[in-house]
Length: 152
Image 1 (tube, rainbow, N blue to C red):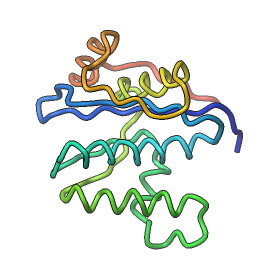
Image 2 (tube, rainbow, N blue to C red; image 1 turned 60 degrees about the vertical axis):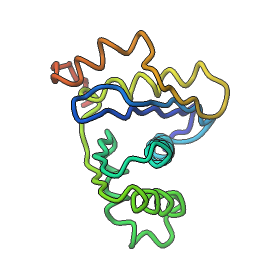
Image 3 (tube, rainbow, N blue to C red; image 1 turned 90 degrees about the horizontal axis):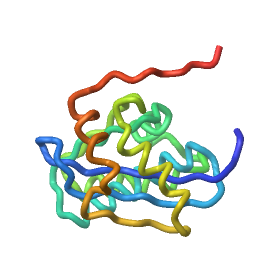
Image 4 (cartoon, rainbow, N blue to C red; image 1 turned 180 degrees about the vertical axis):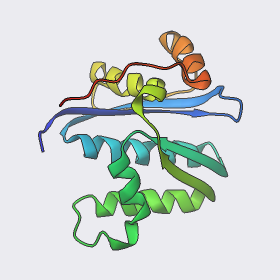
């Protein structure tokens, strides 16, 4: 797997799709799956810090979702400690479900992840949505279709 500069981002919305909080984290160098799992970890930490007791987590990494669902069987996987930490945070939330969605309907999180490359290493918590995110928030909420490129 190729390594490079990685970052993660996420947004917590209320039941109406309105911004509660978000984050962007510059993770330095690593692999894409590392970024996806660290993004889940930081998002769950933020949810716990906000005192949320019900959470639907939407990840655009099917592999990360599979790792969470098979956390009891990861034994020697290099990300097992991080996945186990995520599972512990999910228990703290209480009612927490994780499922896969496509990046094209998760544009705010994708943009926050890309924005992380402009930051110093570490996490930046955003209690107010950045101005550039408002249109994307609305588009994600109503499901504006976007083109998806596939390599053949």
